[in-house]
Amino acid sequence: MAKSKYLHKPVDPFQIIGNDPISHILDRMGSISFQGRNLSNAFQIWKEMLKDQTTIFMGLAGAMVPAGMRRILVYLIENRLIDCLVSTGANLFHDMHETLGKYHWIGTSHISDEILKDEGIDRIFDTFAVEEEFYQADKFVGQFSETLDLSRAYTTREFLFHLGKHLSEIGKEKGILSAAAENGVPIYCPAIGDSSIGIGLAIHGKKSRHSFQFDTVKDVIETANIVINAKQTGVIYVGGGTPKNFIQQTEVTAGYLKGDVDGHKYAVQFTADAPHWGGLSGCTFEEAQSWGKIQKQARMVSVYVDSTIALPLVVTALEEEKSIWKDRKVPSFQYLNDSL
Image (cartoon, rainbow, N blue to C red; front, top):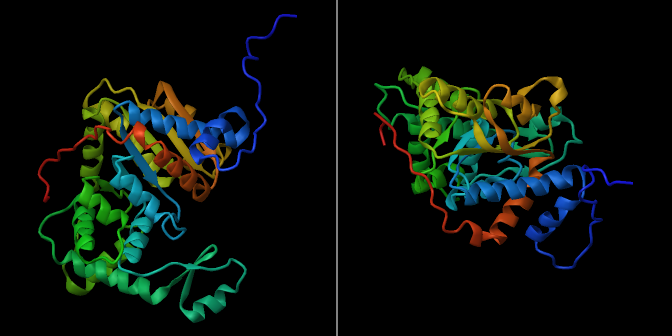
């Protein structure tokens, strides 16, 4: 009986090898099934992006900084394993909190939240934070805004660069914002008002009568121009939400501005959301192809996994294979009419 064309590679039962590097483990997981194989494919695609002169966007959603992922993001920025970060405001606020020497604490979800409220403790699933310290960070953001020219509107990239530069001078820890300012990696936060950064700016502006203004439409133009000027682009999504959509829409906007943009060439997402609910956080890259956001022949994979599992493993594996990307030529960006 003729062998079917679909039966070209057998599943290779995973072999335990003592002291095997994580990069080798992920390589070998490419011959098993389910999310193990997808995690291996994510590692391979990220390496291809780095070798293929690709401008890499990362979308960062979920409570990744409180969960202990800050230093991984700093590593990615300092080593230029990503070129542009789009984040929720919450992650950047928590990054600032830790950069200023404060902590998130190991906690538990099995506790009365009424008791935590009385103790002045905020809970993020199994992680705790001190509410008073968050109030102080809100105040810090508002007071920092007074050091800028309040007669004009800022892109979120400009504001976050200035904030990161300030944090690099006074911070007790290296953070995402300070590392990005030092290494020329732009950070955008399209929903910055939906965070304690927005709260801090709003409350300070109300008290001082010096309202801070953002030009988020200019963010849209700038990120589209990054796509237009790139040889090709790739995306890595940690969670979904606004950062994912904001990066996806760069291809649509670039298409309107230039006309011959054909979508991201590489795409990886780590998500715990399922596609069948219809939300963007779980939607597949195949769906995005219908919008022209992802190339028809793109190398892409969705890994349905908690990002606090995926990121430590994949980024450690990339470090082990540093010879592949250590001489990578990184893109530089030019922006018009900004304050930098």
